[in-house]
Image 1 (cartoon, one colour):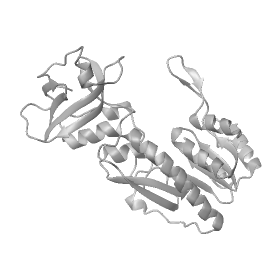
Image 2 (image 1 turned 135 degrees about the vertical axis):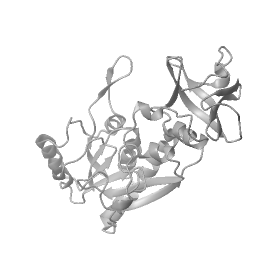
Image 3 (image 1 turned 120 degrees about the vertical axis):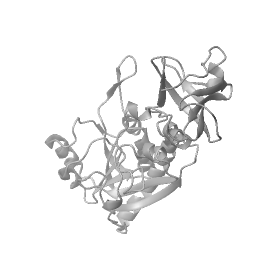
Image 4 (image 1 turned 90 degrees about the vertical axis):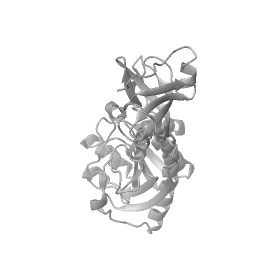
Length: 309
């Protein structure tokens, strides 16, 4: 089966690896252009490009994959299927119609829930207990195509978005290979989505991570885990934005005002919330490294009794 692979970030790499290792003829990898990165703004290749070059696969990086030049290039490959994993551009119908088996997308949620750019983060922020991978035939809508296969995994109560991302990227690779085998045999299902049950997972903004101390402890804990590592949950103190990477929740009764720092010790910074308190265990001040509160307190103080915003 001749494959054109479209993908960009680290999430897509295991799927490309599995395709290559399973012996599929990956004739072209389409990925986003190199981007400036780091303090020096040096151009850096996307992770998928690095892996493709390692395997000796031709890489194509158009600014827009829907131009006539790009479409012609893909047509010349004459792929049986186009596999799309977190590519980062919406495909026009003319591209979708090129391969005889269609364009198959690996999506990191149990569709039709959490269509869109950031399903991994939002399932944690919203306190879901499970999620998974769905493979589907792409159509001109946003994640609206007929589904082929689904695999479900549980979300551990302490799991961060980064940890869930790593589990799902490996699961996605496994489900994609299983899907292609069904497609080749002609036994792949086409299951229409229940569109009325769809929910949306929009791209995160830096402001998404702002902690509202008037919420319940569980809601704040979900936000901290769902925005870890990016954009990061945060609060403001003396004009500084302080990121919070790990907390524990405690719903035992505690006096104090919402957002008040009740006590500070090596166990953490205890902050009053709606139904108890949140214990900040790991944080990062601007320009400093990420560290445990117990380590921060070895050379610094954090004032008790202040109200965090």
